[in-house]
Length: 253
Ligand SMILES: [Zn+2]
Image (tube, rainbow, N blue to C red; front, side, top):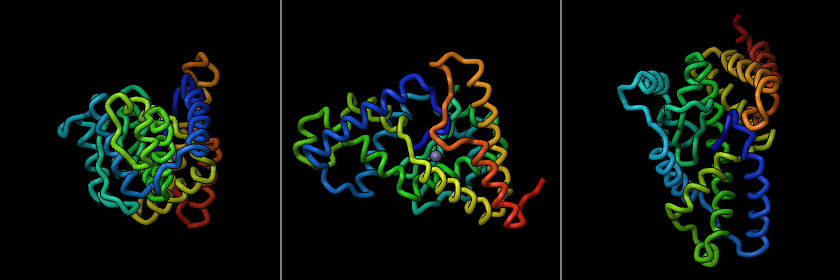
């Protein structure tokens, strides 16, 4: 799972906690071998929880109509059958999860063109295809298992209780991928756009929009409201895309 932009408020505190907790689990009880199927199962539970705790756009909602139209040809990508929903929320975000669930926030759709959305969601699908989301689920599960003696002692991957799911989802949404993972997801998206004949430079313009928002947020907002990206500098990412597009003869104005 991945955040494009996240509030600075508790994400960094959460990450510190996670790292500490994961370390403790590694030293003590090891989780059993964590398979793709385990990740998909837990991802499904987390997604079901988030779907009930967010306002999901109905099938005939204009947001959902637009997203469905955009992704009708892309139901199978990254080795998974995908399912799409829109959360009608103010945060600017989108994520994909290890079970093939893609969730797009309406506020992101408000500011992006169709092809920019394809580029951003292509990036999120890249995290799934590259198994980044599986590893994020595994780490979040280890953290959750630590707080549950039964789960950690059996070593098996158990279902999470309703009371565990909130923390599990918070940990997932706080996942910070490495720069390498982010770059590889950008590459995945670039190839996705190219392969399907979309304008690859839309990916660059989406990153430039993030760069603008990061700049504004940096100047005008209180610390807790500040947006920060777990990704490499958005402007650098945009430049990298444009460079590749030029090389491929795909840099349209
Ligand atoms: Zn990412």
